Image 1: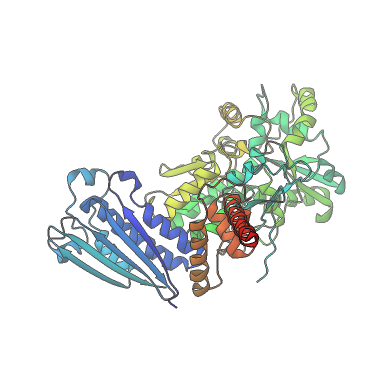
Image 2: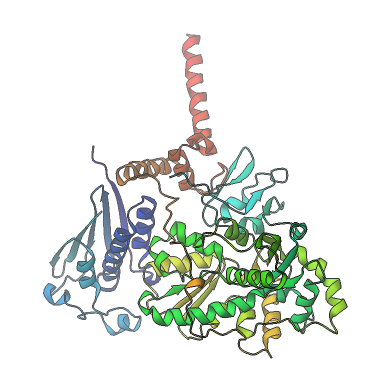
Length: 140
Length: 430
């Protein structure tokens, strides 16, 4: 039998102050499961950045987290505008966030680069006008 | 490894009615009501005192030493906490308190606020030399240190590794007393006049130190009525005993320790719920610009401890008045080696809340917890004795509770049983 646990989060953009709640919840659950502090830190940062991206750029979405004995798998799926140039988006400092978002302190352009830095495997799939799916795996 | 845990709040089960008020207010969910009595799990308790504050029947008792402990020593030195000075009305001069302390049984006095100024000075130097480890979290509050040790593994390295002012004061006081009297150390009693029971745990089971130099912890609320008449007696001619200034006194209330850092980028939070929120956000790396984070488990800071007499905010105002015309500090760091003031033991994360002993077991148990939790009504009513339905589910998986402890589950089962009996009766009738 597969020894794993799955959690599903619906990320809304209706209340901006709630952004980051899903990654915070995952952090607490991993902590309770005794996962190493180093892995918890990586998962929290990677998922947080992805979650914020969904709120800022895509009007929310869905995050599925699957924990198995060897890794934490996160699939972040949104129905947003898609990413026009993935390579540019992955460079540090580049951001398509609007003025409003930047004035709140976001849009530094480090989201995707950080997600890549802290995950062991990452895949970005996008269709303009339909949405984006980011898959990240972090080894336990 | 078997760990024996010490905590400094106990239950008087004669007074406890099993009302469940405390289980909901405990920040680490350490309390369970079983057989109508509210028991504290020593491994989870951080001595924050919330249950003491909440209990309507005063059944939660903070642990501290009785004042009669003075009789166990040939020579005693009183170490008053800075917040002690804020407990009195119409006090103009701290020397009145210090002089009166020598009249109620103590041979000498050593101000913790003096040591606090030294810790402030040495920390300023340490933080300058270790900028890469910022932000630094204050470690004077034993409750906060315990909380970080058991719940925030990624913040353990950010704790400021200095001994708390009480320890520094105790070391100096003991040295001075031995020198003054020529007595052996065991005959000298270094006695802390404390705002809280957490300091009791801090001296008997220290974190960061192998052994404490404090011999006993007595309660401010017990010293207060004893010292008042003597304060009246000496108020016109107190001895000149005070050796601390503004910074030392300010440590008694929230914001004072941070103020002693003489920087702008700090945060001071008080009240255990607020402290937990700050720590969670800090772990999520939301405060990268801050240098220093002062955290106090009690609202208002140490003036809000459960062994205090005065309202915390009134006491804070009194401290402000007392320090107004004092010099900024009377204890300075001359640039020497401060390693003696640092922790002598490495502090490691203790995952007491962990479900399983390895990832495989944890996954299995976590799944069980979520399955059981989905069967429970989700009302967090507390009738089962656990603070939330999820906590009951965890208790069931840990083997210390049953699903039937939930009265909703029990009621469903009784209905089912009654249905089954009804069917049995009908089938027998035929």
